[in-house]
Amino acid sequence: GRFDASSAHGKAPAGVARACQEAGVRCVAIVGSVGEGAQAAVASAGLAGLFPIHDGGRPLQESIRLAPELLADAGAEAVRQFLSSRG
Image (tube, rainbow, N blue to C red; front, side, top):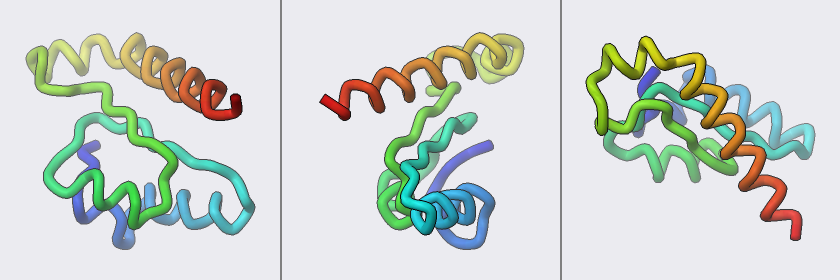
C-alpha cells in the first residue's frame, strides 16, 4: 500500500517497527508507494528505511504486473543498504 503521514499512527508498519525497536532489531518497510509526509512518518515510526516499488515512473498497472520482480529488487536494495551501513 501507500506509506504516508498516517502510516506511523496505528497502522501495521508502525506496529511492526515498534515491536522491532523493542527487540533491538532494525526494521524497514517495503511499500507500494509513498505519499505526503512519508519521510516524517519513517522517523516517527522508527523505521530504518523505506523502499517503494512504485515511484510513479511507470503506470500503476505495470507496477502491479511487475510486483514480484519489483519486490525482489526492493528487498535486495534494503539488504545492500543494511550491509553497507555495517562498515
